[in-house]
Image (cartoon, rainbow, N blue to C red; front, side, top):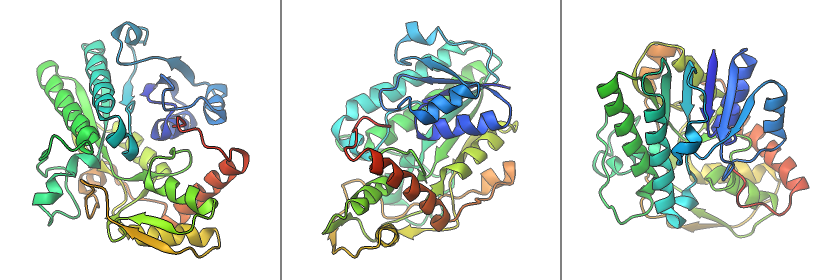
Length: 328
């Protein structure tokens, strides 16, 4: 099969490209490298046959350089990262929405399956009103209750993207799937998420060790499991919305911090802080639809995935003590 992965230099996109190449697919990676990075991992994908296309998907005159004969388009290109939600919320919305609109219009009429990358951030406001919905099914109501909270720039952009894909399909009969990724982590995931931030601070022996929202819980999914689920799902004829994540371990943030610092063999003082405004107390996906469609079950538990992730970041910090904030 011929596969296009937008955001292919980023975290999930690059791992998905690796998985697709291992299964003998033709892979095109599309990225503007604004947040992704063309590093040794991407060079390795190119050396194995992936084609790299530098493209700003918010500009239609660049989108038209893409081929039109892809069997599957995985649209993962987006501005992500919790810090970005608060610091550049308009850019988050502009890039995430415009890129989706341009791709939908460009591939209109093509025999292409469109797989849209969404997020569990779409559920954030819902939890304020439906605290009972854990594990959370795809059928839960979505909402934005405070348009002035920049935290919702990303979740709002993903809700809008889902609306665009669903209504485009309704009008033009596009074959599509929407994947709501739930707290995916692993090597090369950047530095603006909780796990890499904890690893960085532990690596440099931060003391005291600040923890925001220590009692909040998350169900983290290792990236290899996430891309395996994504590809398995794309190979089915199922349409609609699917959670992708790990529903077998719901971990308090405090416990996550303890696991990380234990790996670096030091014992800092934990300084407990209030969680950021708009951050939810619990997250755990209902994977019933995914399992029915693909038979998926996670292969990595938290300890196994965290060990691989810590190893990667430790090696990175060993050679790059000053972190480039644009990386991923």
